[in-house]
Structures are given as structure tokens and as C-alpha cells.
Image 1: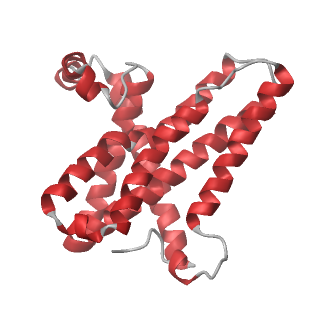
Image 2: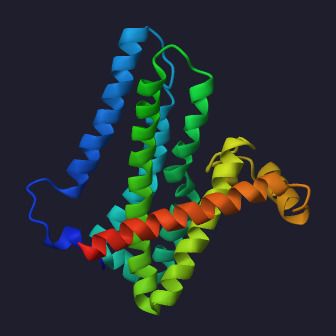
Length: 224
């Protein structure tokens, strides 16, 4: 199985990838704790939860990387990848938490911008690394063309998931807890695309942006 990026194979850093990610996440949580202490408010208290949800797909692929015997079992692999696909939009969803900048005003905007962006960046890292691992599992068996198709398909589904979560207010677990309403809303988007041009405009734009972001980070790792 492939490592997330080639640089991770050759760099001889005493700090592991997990430790770097943990340090980055703790920095974000530290910013939030400082904000709460200084302002005596609990604004943005939802960010750690969103970051935990962003971590879930990373945790799934990390576990799969450590248990190759599971990956070799087709049924288990498909089940885990389906679970991963259900949660992967959460890794990029935090980008839209920047919307809250216009509502919460108890701290300087520059601080809140850094706060939300740091959480979003950590979520993006979790998403990119976990997608890289999935690309190695699936694309490594089929070739680079399938890998590119896989990346764009996942990013398109991510963008759709972001829209559904941000504007329709559904969560990943609503697939099990509220499937009828979720399916009804998605069906409305698919069957009436012209009436939902806003949704598809956002989905397409975000899909292209996140694909470019992923491929750029991937190429940087390969070039180094």
C-alpha cells in the first residue's frame, strides 16, 4: 500500500505524521480556548466537533493502512470504503464555517479568521491524506486514469455533501436516521437541476477547486 505522499517515505523527521497533525489540531483548539477565556463566550464551540468528524475518514484509512489483511478482503474493503465515503465530506465542510465570520463579533476579525481557517486547514489535511490512501488502494490496482476519475468523483460528492450539510442541514448519519427526507431532497436537486442552479453551481465550483487543491498538494509531494 502506498504512503500518502512520497516525501513521507524519505523524510527522516523524528516527528511522525500523526504527531504533526495532532500538534496542528491542538494549536487550533488552543486558539479556541484562548478566545473563550478572553471573550467569556462560547462562540465557535462547534469547531472541535466538526474537526472530529473531519478526522473520522482519516482514522478509517489509517486503520486500513495498518490492517492490510482487511483491505485484501473485498467485502470488508468495500464496506469500509463506503463508510469512508459517507464521512469524507466532513473533512472539507469546515471551509464553509468561514460564513460565521459575519455573525460572531465578540473577537477581532483577524483572530476569528485565523481560528476558523486553522480548523479548516486541519480538516483539509485529514481529507487529502485519507483520499491519497484510498487512491493508493483503488487507483493503484487500476491505473492513473481511474485514479484521476476517482479523485474528481469523490470531490464532486464532497461538494454535494457540503451543500447538503450547510444549506439543507443534513448530517452523515442521516443516511440511517432520516433516509426518506434526505433522499427526497437529493431527488429534488437531481430531477430539477434548473430550479436548483444555485446548488449545482456551488457543487461544481467547489468540486473543481478541491480537485485542484488535492492534485496540487499531491504534485508538490511528488516533486519534492
